Length: 261
Image (tube, rainbow, N blue to C red; front, side):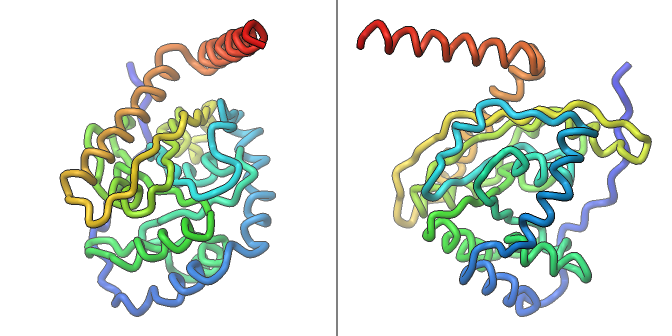
């Protein structure tokens, strides 16, 4: 019998606050990188990720060390932000639903580099901010499923927004599978399952001026397919099995390079 998942609050699909409320958060993100608040949160949360959830990463080196990058993880839990970023040296700036921006935590989010997307509206400001981060060589995380999965399964449908951002900027996308966080939200029941974060090889798309919605959707679908492929491997083989496969592949690659040297 499958393990029961903790209930989630009802989704609020429209933020009724005026767009002007979020202007200051966008301006901060566009004009400066995250301040020391990012490292403070990392210092607090990362030990919990490693100890309570026994979080481990696979192939974090697939995230380019410099230059603009879009991270595209699946999304089960509000904790996904922390699992995604805990294993990376680079600072990750998240596009997050606007409902999170309420006192007192909006100060933490804004100073930590998070920026809002206004739920229930066509929010051009969120894309302008994301492009500003990428233009200065930063890292943007965007969930291509849109919101959190409420079923404990990766969604079958991608939202076109991540395809739009990739085609507007030409930035590479790293699909990321976060395995285990559908049960991480059971923490109030003192359940702390192992969580594994696997970073796939980057996908690269040529920049397209005025890309159609169909082009945007095609890119988003390809990204989601890559996420599901990596996630499926973790589901079938587990963390240990995937690590063994990755290590064997690296040994084979090193052997091949030595043979041709």
